[in-house]
Length: 350
Image 1 (cartoon, rainbow, N blue to C red):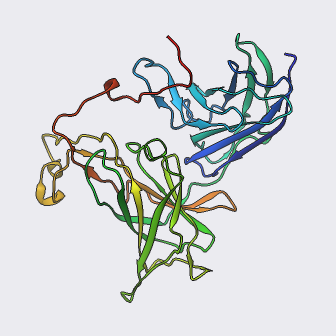
Image 2: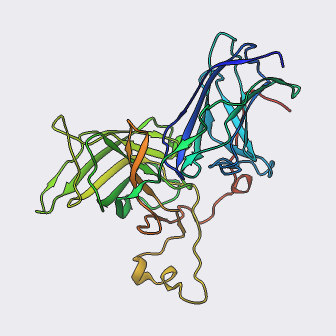
Image 3: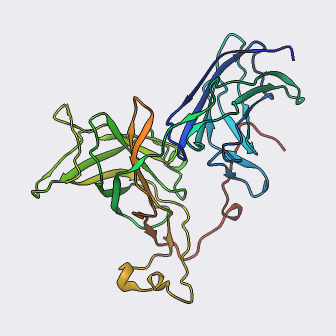
């Protein structure tokens, strides 16, 4: 290999063990990057073999797992995953004097501690030959801290429209802080389940949102003046609580409401069929109030300390399950590509 790499920088969006995180790699290669070449990132075996949120996108490629990724330098990029190795192909050339940046979204962090193996980043030409490789991209290994404590209890998630495909839906989270306050420098994040594709279907950089709380005396007030919640992938983020221009600490004695407006409902949902015994709640309308044709996986709420890049608390689905049900908008639905995602690549071919 005649090439080399320099200016290597690695960053994680959060460092809790067992949580999803965005991993950003920045570096330079002295040969530059040409369209048709690839970047290979190999993870330590402490990680999940498919590195988190990878899945099959195309029915025509049943053995190919894709994950969400992005790059400013490489422009439109796509990433495939196979047993700890992520292969990235970009659509723009990068000169040797410029940085290459790659962000892999929703990587599942490994167990608490420091990985003994290191991240490896390789630059591969169009023939499959290695042009350069960095065998020690994160010199200290990947470092993770303890999982977040359970301090958020979700009482309910309410949607203003329960039809699949519906747009401009408002979602309201009602929750309690079980064991601790939410400090003035901690933001609140909502994770929408996998049936949603906020980043693809809504195309928003932020949603309109509002908040309210009921204190132990029964008084109602706004607990956060932030009305623009940013979004990334299936996350929606609310800035640290601010009331009348000052930081605000949220207490365990309060009941909190957070409404996110303008969300697009999923295109499909999970079916629920009662077993022959015990699963009476799947068919008992007195329990469910109304029966839905489909259901989501569970929502999650997280408190986040940006200075430490650490989740300080979260909800746990086995303790406080939060999900919503849907009716089908049409009696007869048309299925395209067997229900799998349809991806249109840049350019054309036959």
